[in-house]
Image 1 (cartoon, helix red, strand yellow):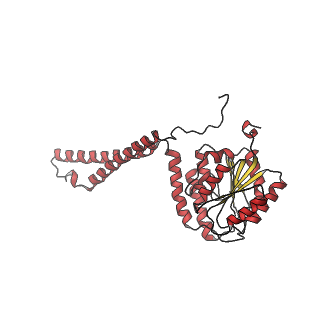
Image 2 (tube, one colour):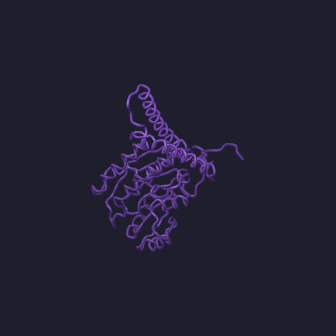
Image 3 (cartoon, one colour):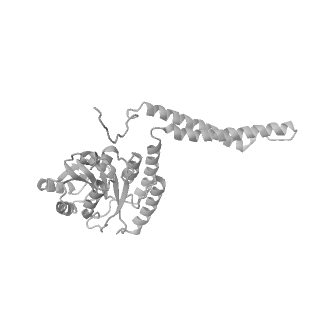
Length: 328
């Protein structure tokens, strides 16, 4: 067993469950989790994150926590979103392995022991569930397939279901990343850019919703694609913005200058041979070249300013250290 695995953790498994108006499903879900993990002899904790529920969810959590020492609750003052709930929950976990799941009973706790094994025995950093057989309407499954295909192409991570709420993480992963906005869909992408590249997948059981209705609409896919662009750019160029803006600016500037030199050269050659020619400034191509030069200069300056901000940032030299040896 590696030194990392030998470290002591208060519990073996932490389960983070964000929820919004799921009062009906919580008693059944917590009993199911307790039954499965007790049968497998795993020590655990459950963190129920109430994301501004307007039903009796918090009252139910209080009642459950009063009789179950495994349960811990956090209540938001208003609805901040799933990413905020996960981020706060991750900070509070104490387990060797951290699992996330939804509170609507569509994720089965029966999957938890195997997810725990994949992290602790197979050495994976992250395991994402794959709902191969879904019980969702076409209005949800078709956009999901498109969303997953684009994310695979951009990120290079070969997962079928990035949006599955049932995932397992080595504790180092959740303690090293920050989830915000709508970035919970892209935790595998964030983890990969942080250096956690042992990412696996497990086919998991998907169940029909038993209580209530879904809290997500089609707009989440629009926001999702925008967030994917954001996290891809930030992950690759956060510490070297000049590489992005400077490269684009230089290319735009050179294209504009080459077009301008070609137009001026053409004018000189035609005049030298006594041919009629339009003025350089009378040609539409000249103005396109001028725009390219101006845009190039602006992009270069944007990269320069971003570098100055980065150099003066308080986190400019924060790096994730995996292990230390013989250091005091």
